[in-house]
Image 1: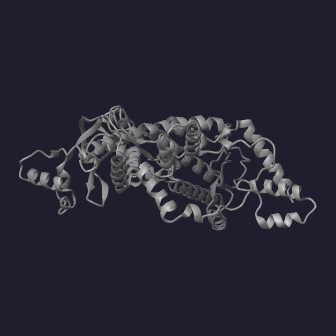
Image 2: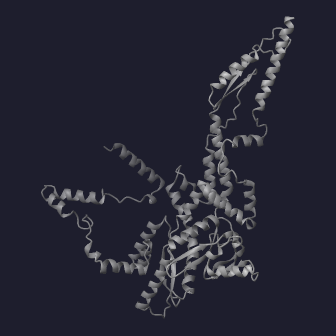
Amino acid sequence: MEKENIIDKGELNTQFFSEFIKKQSSNRVIPINYRNLHSSIYNTSTTALDSIDSSRVAGWLDNPKNSAVNLRNLSRALYDKSGEYKSLLNYFINMARFKYVIEPNFSSTEKMSKATVKKDLGIISLQLKKMNLGHELKKVIKTCIIEDAFFGYEVEDANNYFLLKLDPDYCRITGVSDGMYIFQFNLAFFDGKSGLVDTYPKEFIEAYKLYQNNTVDAWFQPTFTKSVCFKFNEDNLNIIPPFSVMFEGLIELNDYKKLKKAGAKINNYMLLHQKVPMFENDKKDYQPDNFSIKPETMMYFHEMVGDSLPDEIGAIVSPMDINPIKLENNDNSDKVLEALRDVYNSSGVSSFLFNNDKNSTGGLTYSTRKDELLIIDFYKQVERWLNRKIRFSRDITKKNQWSISLLELTGLSEDKYLEQLTKSGSFGFPVRGRIAAIHGLDYHTLTKTLELENTILDLDMEMIPLASSHTGGLNNAEKVKSSNSNNTTTKSSTAAKAATGNKGGRPTKSTKDLSDSGQTNRDSDSNALKGGEK
């Protein structure tokens, strides 16, 4: 009878443990295939780029002609959500410097009247200043680098000017005139937007009225001399963001970041195994599930352990030995860093510009020169537009005797460009206008500024330079003090060198002119000096 009771208890234990194990297993989602594994890992961290479907992006890039809207919206989204994409685009946006100089177009038989030239330069200068070229063109190039094309319309009165940006989803390029693209605007843009059309120029209001009366088609072409269309990739009619080649790489980079984060989380997890004791099978009848403790006892200790564990540590109960299997990768390289390098390299820009790891001074110099050419090529479109405005506007000049040229410099080369102009000027080349342009002055502004400072305010007489070795050595007080010393010559020489920062020897090279080894030596010398300073 006692034997039967023991068997009944063993069956009870067996049933309980079976139910417990099934219940514990049902509470966990076990990734048994790649899809579930992928989901379980990636759900550990979400990013703003998760909503982008990489398969759809590949289709858009394969058929850009019919995917202009999708590619443009994706580029905008990446600019807002991806730090890598935004940094690269801002690198080009902030590189642009729209410095201009007014140049004469007089024929060899025409004579330049001093009074007429001054009058023309004044009119052109005031017009360009009213246009706020630095601000307006900064908005233009930002749009072109993000979206590829800028569609706009000039809004101007006697004292104000700005470029009204049109919604590119309702614009289409239709041809070329005077070397620049022309486009049409879809008047359906104003449908359902009460009162919006009244805020647009008069030409749009009149065209929309005709469209509402079914007199004209929805596609309306603005006046050529008022509409502007800039395109960064001027050789291709399709609207493709200039750096769309980075899209797929950025999505992959996002995946690598999530994998790295998931791996970091997994490395901090721990699993405790509570092994359920079993009776030794002395009779060798191989009785299954022969547990040696009661279910209540097992649950008591299991709950006690579970209540004392932090979230990063879990506990399971099993009668079987559990051996960890680690899918280790012996490759110690940082996959996120490699993916980031591939993203920048795919754009054609050196990754060294955005990463200090193993950078090369010489390599960066040649890389940035290549990048500058992209912006300088864009300057040519701006020149054509400005010269078109001067040529077609009767209020500026009566003859085509003047043109606008943008200096072929960027924010990375201003110092070098100024140095080259100064050297050319020493040989008699007419470079004063370009030197003034670097400082934001055209001919008219330069002459008026000189007249204001030197003739009206007499600043050339009132402003006395501070004394230095360059302007005449030590000042009077220092000379009197030095005359009371026995080492007048030595002290004066030392003070002069200190004032100019001259320590003797060969002049120090600029950092950009150093080789990689030279830069390394300079850095090591600087560190050694700092360590020995007192």
